[in-house]
Figure (spheres, rainbow, N blue to C red):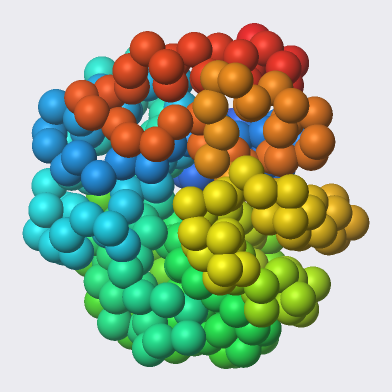
Length: 312
């Protein structure tokens, strides 16, 4: 009897300990965790897919990186090597968890109006934690992106819609994440509060500005990123991203983001990052091109960003 009682006590204690550990375990996606905590997240774009750059960015202090495969080569094998290069085994051992210090997100080449499923499936299956889609102009575009990112949901799921259309076959991604339950957690946040995949849509045209509210209202959209250069070009003002009319449209999109509690980003630098944070941008980049880590200008912008946001 005593042995049975002790066994029961130990079993309950183990279950409670496991529960506490699970609660203390950080998210796999640091960018989502940062936003969920109410803090702005800071990143850069990079088109340098070298292993040296992967190692440097993994310990850069950035919350995320946009791996730019829109204006750089779309090569899935190279992407897989780059992601492996970002794996920091010493950090895993020291921290005791699998969260990457810098979250890798891929910007795919195809625009929102194009058939995106194969590219989204390819980069997610390599193990990235989010996708950025350029030139999304309508709610229909946004919906197709979310459907391509999500798996078909099991019966009785809390968040069955939008219908997922991603194909099964996540052996590489599951291994890279270290998540045997990958298909359950590889879902869109914040639609699924437990989801670890961030869907970032770019607003880069006058049509997109007009449809911004409808785009952001599609369940599964996680963040908006404004593209000032393309926006200026669509307005007949190429090379004039600082034009007052372009800035007015940027502020229109930001206002809707703030109203809907949607993280909003755009490119910044050391000279304007503090102002952009004060305006309400929660997902800005602090530089453009990572090259074996981050350079002095980006490091200074990141320092100012953390200081301005209270994350110093």
